[in-house]
Image (cartoon, rainbow, N blue to C red; front, side, top):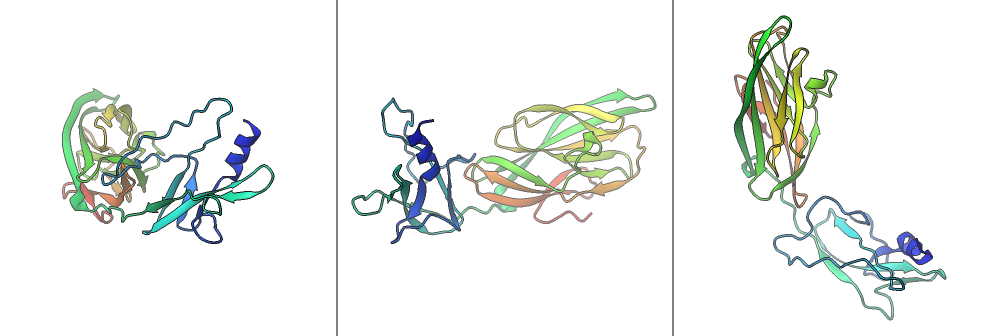
Length: 267
């Protein structure tokens, strides 16, 4: 890294277009690290990003990403500390280089903005030393009606004291059959093992892009546990622009089918 690169990386700040200029703070922030969301909204024109690769001797360039949690227009420029200690900002005397950013109201997802599709995914049977089990897997795919979903944050699930129950949100086994519900982080198609104790099998999840995958596992043939328990099953779902909604895992009267709720399941 050259001395100039180091200085730019260390001393380049974004400032608002006020006198005197002050660094962005509070509800406005900036970072040299790009997040995972799309930046060109459908109502704006998507411009090609500038190529920041430079030949030897060219001026140094650096890209920053500005975010805000406040709905307003903000005119900003850049402040750069020179090698001699002089601070120059792009809205000061002799310069007129600034941009106006307009923040807009985010979309707040409601239950009406969701599609939940059930799939009869797979079934099979297996033997343990003392039992003959039958199992059935239904995957559920949660998608948005406004924009494609990009990621999900999960809260309040079984953390995996039994590794085959990790990401489970409900375990209903007071009466046979035994139904176990899971929700999964969004990602690539994956094969993993689910169940409890010896009652386990390998399944596939995340078969569809831009969808949150949930699973209902049904085990029949023996039921050594005779218990019902569930966890909060809360999650925040984000679309490709970072809009979000908060929901909870829920279950029908027979605890056999998944529902999406706006408050925690109460049994």
